[in-house]
Length: 138
Image 1 (cartoon, helix red, strand yellow):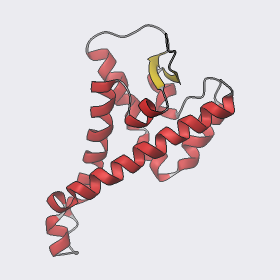
Image 2 (cartoon, rainbow, N blue to C red; image 1 turned 90 degrees about the vertical axis):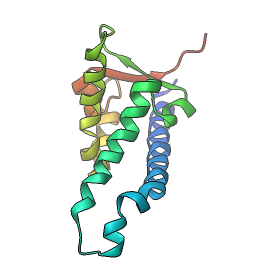
Image 3 (cartoon, rainbow, N blue to C red; image 1 turned 30 degrees about the vertical axis):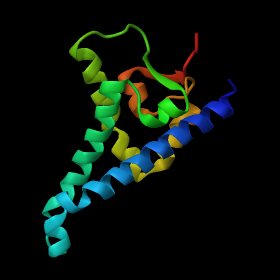
């Protein structure tokens, strides 16, 4: 697969995942942000956005080993060296997701790291020693 095609698939998967997250936020918004909708001065519920974000992404990564966007574009998440067992696998997935907020605030971090790194890894992938690659169909 050419690098350009891979990058478009990776960005497309990220956009689908963001769209799905926006849809989920719209669905749960009346429940989580009820007090804020009644009184806009009440900003106590702002942390729920981040909790829902991490819950959605970690739920997909841990249970399905990839997000919906990666599933659609036939990409898979693999570990760099040795396949970790038990809790180490989940810790690496959580570490990978910690840097997503930086990439949401500044998408150029996401784009530049994928384009400039040798294995097309984002910042969280580099630190967690993971690679997203096209799924090989047997």
